[in-house]
Amino acid sequence: MFIARVPLKNLRLWLYGFAFMLFFLTTMYTFLSRIPGQTVYFVFPWGTYITENTLPRAMSVAFRIWSMIFAALIFLSTTTDTDIMMSLAKLKVPYTFSFLISLSLRSIQLFAEDWKSIIDAHYSRGVDINKGSIIKRLKNYISLAAPLLITTMNKIREIDFAAESRGFKLGLKNRTYIDSFEWTIGDAVLITISVLIVVITYAYISAG
Image (tube, rainbow, N blue to C red; front, side, top):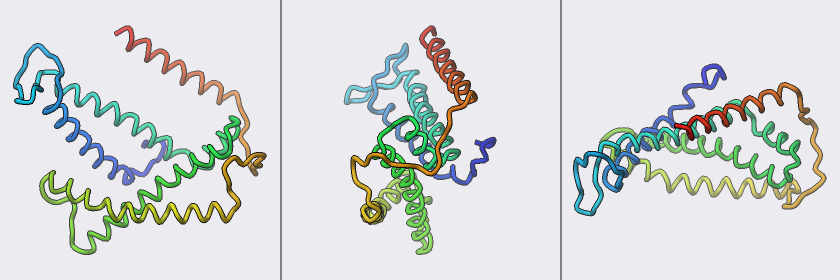
């Protein structure tokens, strides 16, 4: 992400989400899992238990999810939604499907901006949602769901009116584009290397 020049300040919200994910998964695996192991440290009345493999399994699942999140974050931080849409068009993907993907990617930024505005509004009223115990912080973030949902619904209605006013409709065909991508040798080499890395990694994991 440093090489791609992704602003590190954009990762703050993701780090909070990762911390919550670690806490949630650790709690879930601690109280609700039955992961076998050589030593059972504690057995709960409802039938679940804790072994030496409980915490490593929780951390493993958390970091698997986090690796996918970071991969998506790097991709979205270094590629514009217009480029993604044009690439899909080059692959002969239907325009309606490409438009929906592009709209979804743009909505992520709108969602993040609305979330930041709501948090700033709470700060301006003297409410610090990051103070207190973990349970209190979780309740504070849950309380932000209602204004965020209302704001999101209003944005969806505005986007719907904007798309309708520009003549968008499902099943639109024969759409033309100002720019287009051309397939180069570098693209083929990069895709080949990426596929080989995935195949080698899968073979190594399967062998292990």
